[in-house]
Image (cartoon, rainbow, N blue to C red; front, top):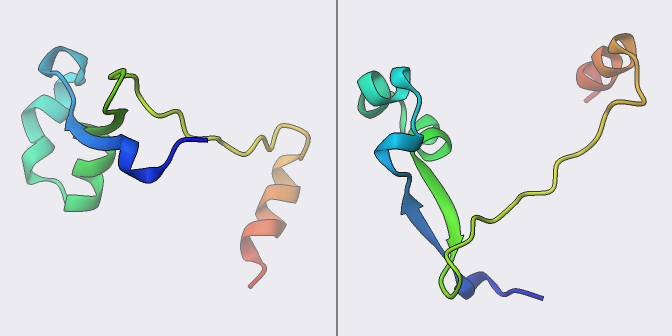
Length: 71
C-alpha cells in the first residue's frame, strides 16, 4: 500500500494541456487550476496517481437525479 508521502504534486507538461487551459489556465480559480494544470505523481517512479472513480453506469439518468437531490 502506498503512503501519502510517496506522492508529490507536479505541474503538467505544457504539451499535455489543452489550448483553453494554456490560454486561460492562470486566470481560473485555484481549485480549477489544481484539476487542470497539476497532477499527483509518485516520487519514485514518476507515474501519475490514478484515482478510483465510481461507476454509475448501472443507474438510469433519473436515478442519478434522485440521488443528487437527497440531503
